[in-house]
Amino acid sequence: MQELLASDQEIYNLIKQEEQRQADKIRLIASENYVSLPVLQATGSVLTNKYSEGYAGRRYYEGQQVIDLVENIAIQRAKDLFGAEHANVQPYSGSPANLAVYLAFIKPGDTILGMALPHGGHLTHGSPVSISGKYFHACSYALDPETGLLNYDTIRQTAIDNQPKIIIAGHSAYPRIPDFAKFREIADEVGAILMVDMAHFAGLVAGGAHPSPVLHADVVTTTTHKSLRGPRGAMILCKAQHAAAIDKAVFPGIQGGPHDNTTAAIAVAMKEAASDEFKSYAVQVVQNARSLADSLLANNFNLVTGGTDNHLMLIDLTNKGIGGKRAAKALDKAGIVTNYNAVPFDKRKPTDPSGIRIGTSAVTSRGFKEQEMVYIGEKINRILADIDNNELIEQTAAEIKELCSRFPAPGLEHIS
Ligand SMILES: *Cc1c(COP(=O)(O)O)cnc(C)c1O
Image (cartoon, rainbow, N blue to C red; front, side):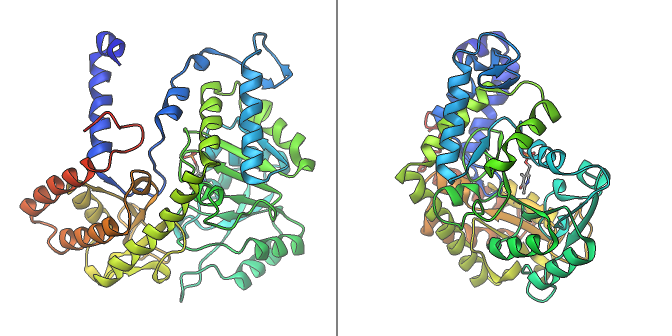
């Protein structure tokens, strides 16, 4: 990046600092990852210069000789990877992808049913602060207060009572695997569209380490940058019968020109995700989450639902007498990056909830295995047991930096 250095040292230096931070720290934010250098290169390519409103063969600007080919490859790879009848790879990110689905199927004021945000759902599933909760009549299902698990009887009853036009399955902070067949039954019973938002676990689905929602759902949305390890972006997969409605909703419904550089990077990431190496990654992500969960349980941490079946877990810190925010800040200083997160039926406020959320996608991408998970569990325990010990925090950060230097992260191989 010598040219960037010469033209804008300020931003160059900040990018270098961020590279170093990503190299030196144990990144456990469940939605984050490390993309490969090829994905970075496609993202940073001249495809960012092109405008291509419309779809291959029916664009509103000339000069699409290359872009049409790129987008068609991305679409084909997405369809092959997930076994989908149709794919739209243009959504700018997960939130607009979800909005496009609503635009495709419902009108303002219609009812949607999703998982409550404080129970692990996403803002775009009908939270009152989101357009999805302001423009639509949003109702939500809660987790079982005893088990912290999805309760399909409750979901079914909520669906019957509210008659939603769309039922949304999928989550940002649920450590178990939804039963997509059950959701399908409930949607059929009330005549709703079933939308599955697999933003978090799409990489596990691609790698065969998580059941696929694609056969059960009318439409599946996903980000491409979380466990799937692609660029910032999103995709909508759907049955052929909904293809025209979905495409029209994305463009011209809510977007203008697609980000062609991102489309190319999605294509690159889908090729990577079809490899045997990626399958091993996906399996290891889940194994690592289990090991980390076991290590935390052994250190007397409470995990929501008692563990995990996917890439993430939620630690309820109530028994440790520490708020989630304070814990996350101390861990970050020690080189372990997490986010504070509400736990189901949290008694504390959302800005300082009782839990932290932890995911294993990024650390698995850099090659961490079970042994490192046990190490991380022990470090989290040591820091949180002695949270004001700055000496311990500094010493831990140094140790973690040393550990990380032995596991070069994808895209950051040039940093020692
Ligand atoms: C992350 C996420 C999104 C939104 O993605 P952005 O790219 O941040 O807009 C949507 N749905 C779920 C379930 C998510 O976890």
